[in-house]
Image 1 (cartoon, rainbow, N blue to C red):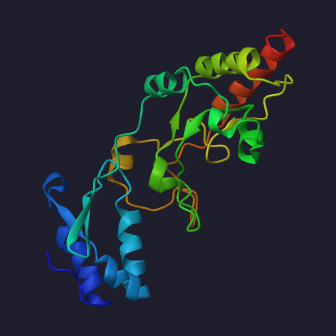
Image 2: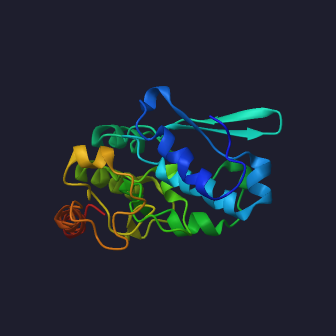
Amino acid sequence: MKEPPAAGANVVRVHRRVAHMDREHCVIRLPSYEAVAADPVLYAHASRILHMEANPGNARALLQRHGERDVWLNPPPIPLTTKEMDAIYELPYQRVPHPVYGKAKIPAYEMIRFSISIQRGCFGGCTFCSITEHEGRIIQSRSEDSVIREIEVVRDNVPGFTGVISDLGGPTANMYRLACKSREIESACRLPSCVFPDICSNLNTDHSALIKLYDARENCRASRKF
């Protein structure tokens, strides 16, 4: 596939030419680094392709020329299951800064040391944010039991714990266990956002699982578990 020499009709033609090919045997060549660095329109074009190829159900590999080399970007990985998320977050993390920092005050650590991550990913598609690029558009959630177990680890092991969990969340606000109502539709979708310009009719927006998790946290507090 030849690289588009300039913005315009060629930009659209490049995308359409590969749209119906087997994605496992297809790669999209982006304009070179030198080209996008010199041309804002080509930069926007390359960025749009990157966002269009963010769904692990249909994304294709990307290729971009950097000087004398080609940089290959694999499609996003398949999202983790709840069991896999639990296993990762329940590894024996120290939950304290690396010893190299000594007694230095680290503002970022102070902010998150009593917080619990309950999810990954974001389907918002905000243009100012890169969460989708490194955590995916499909929400990956932990189980309620796993979250409660981590709260107990914080209670017992994190220095200075005051009895208050500052946050149950993730990179985004309230998306715990929210997902597309259809796996088939989800795997075929190429929209950059599930909530813009309108909330997708296929998006499950039921927050009952999150509310139940909050209630479980409060019940722990009532029983003096933390």
